[in-house]
Image (cartoon, rainbow, N blue to C red):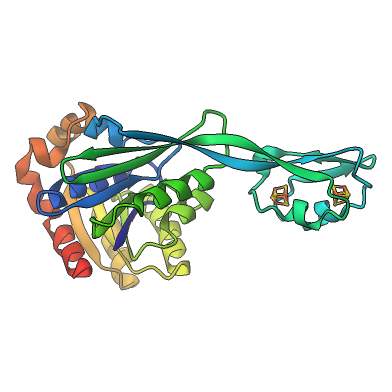
Length: 284
Ligand code: SF4
Ligand code: SF4
């Protein structure tokens, strides 16, 4: 069972929800936490793990031989990502746009295309009591995170002892989020009760609907005064609100010290209970 913790924007508390849920659930069972926010992984700051493995991840980048290229332009026409241009019968490649589909190599009639490997980043793994923790760290200046996210997920699939994977997704609704979310069985959409939070929640909801993933909402930094912003939208669209995590200065201070809220403030566990019950029901 794969549960994606997603949000339309950064800073809503997605990692906080993922980490605290993982902490609660590992009290009873072996689970896997994946930090797929590979551009800015931060779960490790709270878990403080000793990594047992570090695996470099590469992607293929096409290279073009001026000697063999006839300038037919077939590769340029094929490339869906506008990585290639034909200038004075020579191919210019923009590797940062390349999605490693291999199409240009396959279509070239003169074998002018070869591939070189470029490091994308690394996958790291640590075992912390009952928790298998895997995250990805994108190489600085690397723009293409989906190949690394896929490797984080492949790595996590090795842990057959864990019935549950919690996936801390990147924020937003673009390719990296889809790479992290696409095979999830359920998504928890984390938002905050503000007009900005609602705006980005709507985009994220459209995305999970498109992916056909069942989902519910978690309101983080919930307040009696502002929750109606999200509640009205949820009611109008028949979306379940799974839980509300209250706004709390003390919780924010615990977070800012890099500590887990439910560990330092056990009274907070009650707010996560509706989500843990929901997940236990899904895993059955
Ligand atoms: S591998 Fe695919 S995405 Fe990359 S340049 Fe070739 S056709 Fe374009
Ligand atoms: S398909 Fe091959 S020969 Fe044609 S432009 Fe591309 S690299 Fe050159």
